[in-house]
Amino acid sequence: MTGVSGNMGREALAQSMELPFITLIRVLLSNKKKNNKLAKTLQKKYGKRIEIVRGSIADRKNCDALVRGADVVVHMAAVIPPASDASPAASEECNKRGAVALVDAVKACDPQPKYIHVSTVALYGNRNEKHPFGRVGDPLLVSPFDHYAMDKLYGERYCLDAALDCFVVLRQTAMLNPDMLKNNISDGLMFHTALNAPLEWVSARDSGYLIKRILEREEAGEIDGFWKNIYNIGAGKKGMETGYDTFNDGFKMIGGSAEKFFRPNWLASRNFHGLWFADGDELESLFGFQRDGVVDYWKEIARHHKIYALGKLVPAKLIDLFLFRKLLKHPNSPYEWAKRGDTARVIATFGGKEQFEALSKDWKDYPLIAKGDFGDYDKLRDVEYMKKEGRLLSHGYEEKPIDKWTAEDCRSAARFRGGEYLSEDVPPYEKATWKCAEGHTFKASPFTVLRGGHWCPQCCMPLPWNFDRLAKHNPFFAQVWYDSHAEDENYVYSFAPDGTAVAERNEGTR
Image (cartoon, rainbow, N blue to C red; front, top):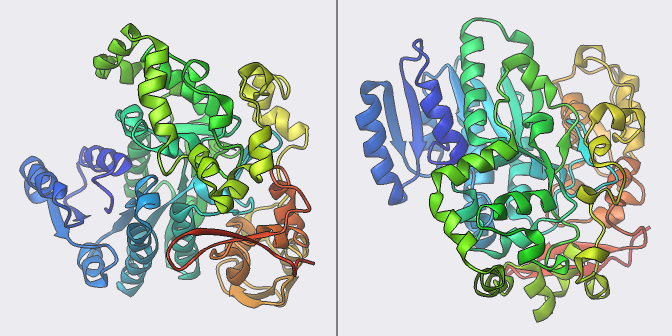
């Protein structure tokens, strides 16, 4: 296992250790000082049932030592926001180079262990009320300047391209954990959350339980059809909220709400990531792991952190003044980007300075999904209703079981992406040849494209982010990109050598 110092990994390790057939779990811990104490704790608690490898996940020799003789490898390590924003190098080391080193180590084993790769909902990019539900196979449109999602996209694509003997990709959604309020009141990251972003939460506890159930059912020989696929990890309808609801649930513990502590124009209006899963039942039907609901989990956090209740004794205006207005000036705050003239990030996050200044400062004038301003809220969260309304994205081919795909399905999918399929019948997991609308020829398996939602690695693997251009001749992208971007936007987003965000007009856009 990697990532056992994180929320999901901590739970996965503890719950997997409950399984009597597991004789040894080997874990990789980085050389960070805080992991010294964790290593001692784990060794004391589990004794000979745990083995600890120390060092960077990006170092191949560490990965080789980790996976040697393993039956299953569970990759959960990640550097997530805001740490990935503050240290892009750390994000690249873990989320990109670490994934590459680990996959290479698994592939070098004989026999290869089964490989569980935990990816992220962030690959889907920004969603709003127009297409709040998503599923595996949807376009992967990583939001500009999101180091975490950019590096995780690369890591997932590398895993798929490696053609491992037995793998599965699990795209993790927003995760509930006991310290989530504390962790989100120290950085401007909280203001990245769009108020109308559909967010499907799942608890770290249930995510860890999912890993336990996978190992348990694998040992029983019950899940052969599970492997060599991609799934979304969510909590189902009881985990579905919007950004607005999430702030209200969290702030209720300290006697407040979004409207008491914020102004609506403080928060991003786009360039976030989050969606409700139309296919979240696929994992649930296999493993029955969805136990925690978001509302009850917030109550549990309040019970465990009784100090939060003291916030109810403080006037909301004081909390607003001394906490949230202070965070509003944080360098990672979208409002601060607008005030200091960070043009590129303002364009990405709001559409531009003019659009930012036009945002309502008054809650009564700000339309919200949660208040029914875009239709009945319960219906919007009902996946069957949304399917009947035609509100799921098209994948460009007649959807059928993976083993029933034909060359015509690949040609149809390629046309919907503005490109071509240049091979004949190729098995789902073997490399075929494709051409994108920009004329790039590339190799990818039908599985990577049709099931994974990946496309041309030159066009669609940032840097740079050129989705304004690509959407103009890629209907697959356009159907969701234009939910939050104007069709006449022609920006290409990138980073300058010093890390400064850049948005340049793309005059060559067709």
